[in-house]
Every structure is written in structure tokens, then in C-alpha cells.
Length: 354
Image 1 (cartoon, rainbow, N blue to C red):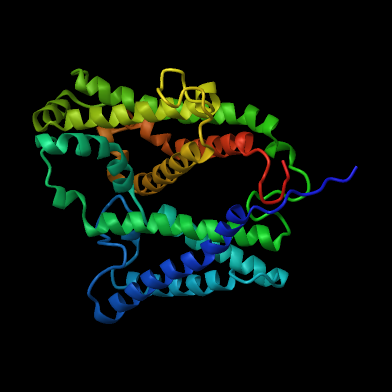
Image 2: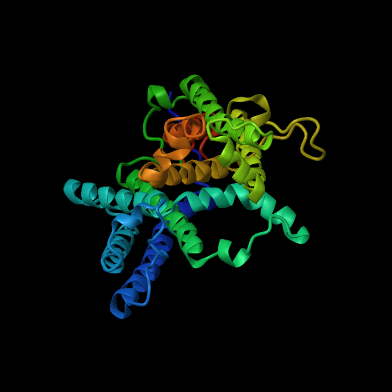
């Protein structure tokens, strides 16, 4: 029996082709900024490197601009190479893929730090409380060039990763839109993804909930993992309520993570007017979950490399223990999100497989 591939859906098949030129433009722009910084000595391409929670502090300030200029401009050339349809020699293909993935990792995971994750956590409070003057923060100190540059780096890393993935699929003879080649591997089938996705989703939900419990305890006056004096200081400054807000964000994230393996994560609940019973768009779950997984991983790399983190609470404690699991959180959330994608991707409109 012969299976005829479905007609290629033009809208579906075009978006991967646009990623490489967009990535090349982004890389070229920031590469030029880094080059200007190198020549003039007027700044750093991704903001100040003085933060103790960022791995960029390990790069000397004078070496950062030329290093990023070479890294980004070379990657821009590599991205332009990926706009072609020809399959290069095996060695050249391996070099381009390795370099592309490495630069994407640096931009999406190494350059950002905990500030991106903290912004995601504080965003609801900042948006809702701004008209009422709470929390009492100077927004000019929150939304800085360094924060914008790190968010831009995260976006550029994701863009480059998409371009590299599309080119990798194309040069491997797989469908550029869905990645399918001949038959799905055992672990990538919907049935297998249902099994291992359940474990990863529960793991990714338990870790942030453990973090939230410590912050809720502090708000309730219980010095869980910290000294009473430190709790008094947090209470006097109001930081304990900011921590409770982050705990609420972590709790909401844990609940939404479970949606990756629950029925209501595939169809909107009945109590949602206008949406009840409708299928949840796959990207509505996959895109934000992927961004949070990247932000968590980026924050983890910086935090675990700082001596102050290991001195939190004086030693290993309930305050630091949940955060020590953040590396597992980022990996587990990324895996759970991918499992959700595999279960719900259905038939590809570009190649007809599935």
C-alpha cells in the first residue's frame, strides 16, 4: 500500500526558511554593536558584566566586546550559509551545526541570568501594582539596558536555534516543518511521550512548588531555612512579600506544568466562557513553557557558580535546597514540554506524515 504525502501547505513550509535570514540579521546587528564597543571602548554588548549571578563576569571586561564581535559576526556568516538548499560535505555540515548550536546556547542560556527569571516572576506584581505605587521600586532601575540586552540575547539564541534546527532537518532529508524522516523512533512516538512525559512533568512541577513553600513560610513568620534575624530584616524591608509574590508565580507555574499531562491542558475547561471544550493551541503551551525552561536554566548557571549562593542560610538548608534542584527543573520542564509537543503535533500539514 502506497502512502501519498499531503500537499505542502505554503504557510507552514515557509516559516523555517525565514529563520536563517532573520537570525543572520540579528547576529550581524549585535556583532556590529560589539565591534563598535571594541573600537571605541564605549560599552559592553550585553550590558555590564559586574553581576555576580552572571557567567560573563568570568570574561575580562576588555576581552568581552572583541570576543562577542568575532562570535556573533562569524555566526551571522554561518546563518547566511544555512539559507542555501544544498547539502554541504559531512565535515562542513558538522562544523556549522556544532558552531550554530554552541552560539545559540551561549546567547539563550549563558548570557541571560537570574534577572530574566526574576522579571518573569515580578511582572504580574509590577503590572498590577504600578497604578498603586506598589511595590515601591524605581522602574528605571528595573528596566535597564543590561536587562533589555539579556532578553534580546535570549530571543536571538532562540531564533538562531530555530534556524539551525531547520537547516539540520533539511540537510538530513527530514521534513523541515516537523522533523519527521521515515518512521518515528520509539521514544518519540505519542505513546512513549505520554509515559516519560508524565514523569518529567511531575518533576518539573514539584521543584518550583518546594521553592514556593519556603517563601510562603517566611510570609507567615516561619524562618524556614533562614535565621530569625534574617526573617526580621526581610519583613522590615517588605522583601518577604516580594518573596511571597515569587512563590505565587512559582505555584502557578507548577499548576500550569501539570497541564502538560492533564486533560485540561489539551482542552479548555468548561468554566472558561467562550473557550470551554475547545482544543488548547499547542503553541500556547509549548512557547511559554520553553521560554521558562530556558530562563530557569540560565538563572541556574549563574547562581550555582557564585559563592554567595552556597552560603545562603549559612549552609545547606531548606532555603537553598529547592534552588539546588533548579538545574533539574529546567531540564525536566524542557523535556515535559517536548513530550507534550510530540503527543499533540498530529499530522504534519507540510509532509503529511503523522
